[in-house]
Length: 142
Image (cartoon, rainbow, N blue to C red; front, side, top):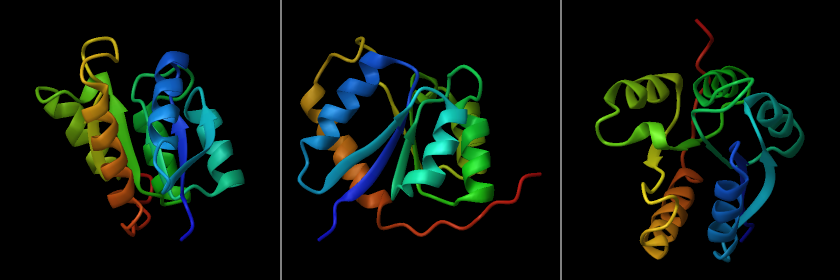
């Protein structure tokens, strides 16, 4: 079976390295690209054709919400928003990214990417594997 191709869009080097290590620990998943912001992410999506995209929300140049809108309008792909801005009480942010077309959200761990990293790794891998099975349809830009 082909590996699930994942694109990471995240401005934190620390976070992107942790996610890459977590995802590459799964025999079913391969990180095929990394971008520092939504603009770079858009370029990579067109080049790499990922199966799933993980994006942060707060990034320079183009944030995760605008990136999600652009992807869903031009290259519909299942998106997991992995961000500090989607904690349980961030209802407005979660609503906005889901409305824009994200399929799921996952809060970054609050303890500076520490805490129980094994349970986070397992959750992340499960989410990616589920998202890879989802068909998404284009959402035209308003």
